[in-house]
Length: 313
Length: 145
Ligand SMILES: [Zn+2]
Image 1 (tube, chains in turn cyan, blue):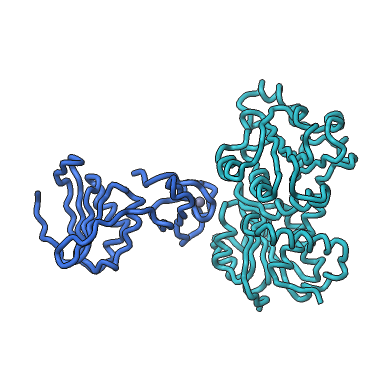
Image 2 (cartoon, rainbow over the protein chains, first blue to last red; image 1 turned 180 degrees about the vertical axis):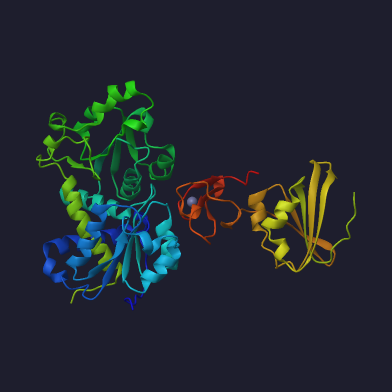
C-alpha cells in the first residue's frame, strides 16, 4: 500500500505551486545539494513510477536519479517497452493500477492533458513530466532554480528569450512563472514568424504590466541582459528558404557574440541543443545550460519530497 | 399559431432559432427526464421570422438550464408556476460545460481516452472564453452550429 498523505496533490503546471511554495522547494533543493546525506534515506521503501508514453531519456533519468538519491526505488515503463503494459489501456486504468504499486508517479505523454486525466483518478501524487506541447513544469522548476543559483535572485532583472517563441512550450511556461516576481523585464528575440503569440502577451505580460521589447537580432539585445534563454529555431518554421538563410545566424550564440554580453549574463537552454549554441561557448563560465540539468534533478528531489509530505529527522 | 395546451408548472423556452429545438432537446437531456415535453417548430415570430419553442412540464428545480446561455443567449426562458409566468430567467454562461462541445485539438487526450467526458471551463466570463479542462484549448464565444 502506498504512503498515506494528509493532502494529495498533483503538479500539472508550474502555476500549481505558489511563489511561497516554490521558494520553499528551491531552498530545500539547495539544502539537498549541500547535505545529500541528510536526505539519503527519506524515501526508504518508497517507489517512484515513471510512466513515459514517449521517450525523454533526460527527464526520466533525472526523476529516477532524484528518487534513488532519497533511498527509494523506481518502477515504470518507457516507450519501447510499453507494448503489453499499456496497449489499449486507458490512462485512467493505468494510473489506478500503478497507484497500487507506487507512492508517486511522473508521467510523460504525447497527448495534452493526459497527466491531468491520471491525476483525477489517482490516489498517489502525479507529476506532469511533459504532455505534448502543453506543460512541462519540472523543466520550469529547473529554469527558475538555475536563475536563482546563478544570479542569486529571481526578481529585478532583464531576461532575454531567443529563438522559437511561438511554439516553445518551455518559453511560455517560463514567462508565466517569472511574471510572478517583481521587476522582471523581457527582451523577446525572434524572427517575425516565430514571435511570442499574442495570447501569451494578453494572459501573462499585459495584466501584470510587464515591460518587454521585441527584437530581431540577438546581438542587439545582448548588452542589456541578465539572463539569456536560448531555444532552437527549426528550419521548417520559416516561411521560405531565403529568410532562413538570411536569418539563421541571428539566433546562433557563439564566443564572438558572448563578448557583447555582460560578465554576469548567464545562458540557459532547455536542451537538447543542436547548433544554436556553438560548442565554443560551453567553457564560458556564463554557460549555465548543464547547470540546469544539475539543478533540475535537485528540484525533482525537492518536489517529490514535498508532495510525499516527508520530513528529515 | 398551433396551440399546445398551457402548462401548470415548468418552463417555456422561446425564441429558439428555427430548426434547433431538437438539438436543444438533446443538449438539455430532456429525453432522460420523466416529464411531458412539447416542441413547436417553425412558428411564426414577429422578431425572428420563424422560431422554435419548447415547453417542458416539470418541477422548476429539476432542470439545469445554464447550458442554454451557452448554446444561444437569444433564447428566452419563462418559468411557469400554477399556469402563469412567474419569472423570465436571465441567462448567464455556465461555469462548466460537459459533453456539449468537443475539444478540437488533435493532440488533446480527449481524442483518444475512452469514456472521458468533454469538459470545458469558463475562464474568461467577460469575453465568453472557455477552455478544455485537459489541454486548455480555447473555445471562444457561444456554440456555433
Ligand atoms: Zn482538449
